[in-house]
Image 1 (cartoon, rainbow, N blue to C red):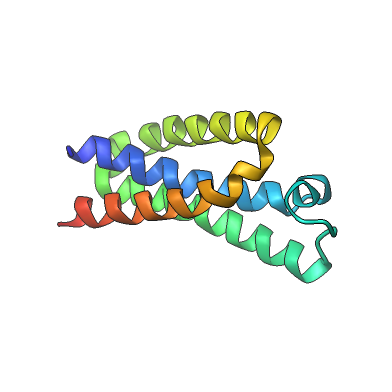
Image 2 (image 1 turned 180 degrees about the vertical axis):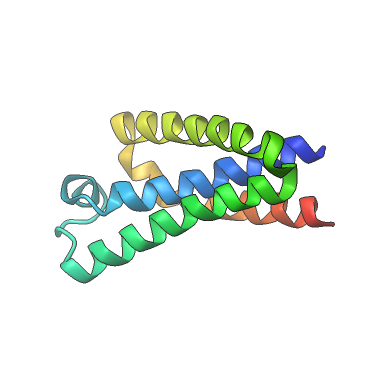
Length: 116
């Protein structure tokens, strides 16, 4: 895997996880997966996790590609992650139950490959 490919995979993975956390902090998206609305503590935790993961995706893109191309790769990967999340939430919201662990595993593997 080349450096730019791993940058896109890491950025898209972290971006997808962050956007999914932000999405699940909303009541209607949370109730698509679980029967009860999220309590205030869970909403706050999901929002903090979501923004932290999005910030980490930017930091990873800058670390792997530098300031010249990192933000450009970050915007592209975040856009792709957002589009995937929109499609999943529109047609198969329960697919997030297996997509989130899969995205975490692929992101971790790509990050380890990029750092090696």
